[in-house]
Length: 392
Image (cartoon, rainbow, N blue to C red; front, side):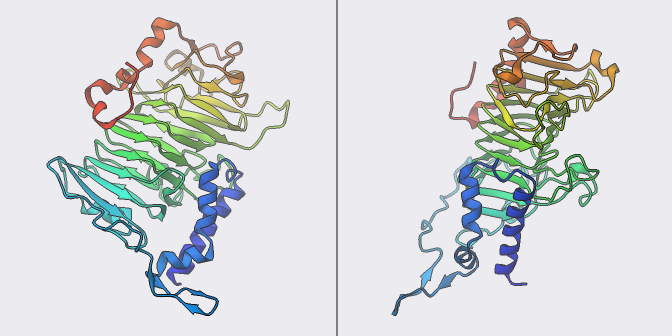
């Protein structure tokens, strides 16, 4: 099969997946536009032909290279603290795949390596091993740069291994890029259908302006301290899960669970499934100034492990949130150990009148430790990655 045919098949598969699973329209409009443009026959030929002859009427134009408009000497020289390499699927810079760029980074480097990734969908499974520290993935916008793969819990022999991108190294940063799992879903909740877009298992990781696209188990916030800001996270069941200690700020959480008929009491999704298993573990998710919308009727979280810890503060919630708000994984013994809190949230779904009895309606004092980056010790490590002013 030719590269053009492979790319066409992959692109059609992505779009078919999005359409068949009711989540195509929940993608941001620019990403829908990008996907449509990507699969147009003209661009497919450009993607794999380094040069082509263009004819208009009877005039024969000169040979044109796809890389003609790519900046000359794009990659700046290394400094004492930073080096830059770039990825372009058309072969216009250092590498054509993201994994090849990661592989080229020196082990345990004290420098920050910025992997600049050009526009496009990079259809590959990417792993950043534990010894590839201090790497940045720099995309060109989460609606125009994406890494996509299609593993499921079945195909990868476990949910934890299904991630399209798996990061085990510390000090990882991603900016303006999307992570997608485009595996066909037989139905939400089907055995073995969990399909992770990104697994983050390193400490001190930062995600700025990123997108996470999937259905069940989209974002595996596995372990370590992480900061997410201005991100778009899409899913249906447990679409943020794991045992990380993470602060989500100004993120958009979009449910793609099937619409529920008016009056029906069915629950068909959950935003979080936090995995804190013991009192001794120091983990939890905080969602600060976020928004939750989309389709279905979902819980804010369910207690995947007995000490599951999640807090929402200043977050807008639509009526897709079930009145009880949370679920103890149908194990009442967990009601005494889980910590689920809400503080100054708004919207129809934020009405706490009918919340489950174990839910904490936090006062100012109780909420104070969850309202800024000190929750993840961010004052010790985060500032170097950010240009925006953070909450003090």
